[in-house]
Image (cartoon, rainbow, N blue to C red):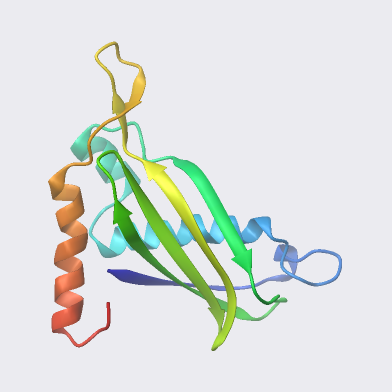
Length: 147
């Protein structure tokens, strides 16, 4: 399932040259991940309450930049979970300004529960969580959307 997150670049997102300061892209990737969760009927708060997890922290992040952006341009990020592990997942992102590729990136995240001693530890991702994404992906395909 792919999700779309859009943001208008404001002056404060830019460096002295008027170009988006690169750490903003990592913030926007996280924002796109939150949108992806919402599209699947999930939220970090709901996951903490429903699945009893500590969270789903980023353990690795990367981005490759193809073109710059400046204030007043609109960044569109396509986000999807491209790989499921037993206790982790990998979300990939593609950023565009109109049809111009801006960046590509990914985050690896761990499903963080609690070990027997109460300390945070990676735990298996429940099938119900994975199925939430599959169900939304199926409904989008049925509606004619591309996956």
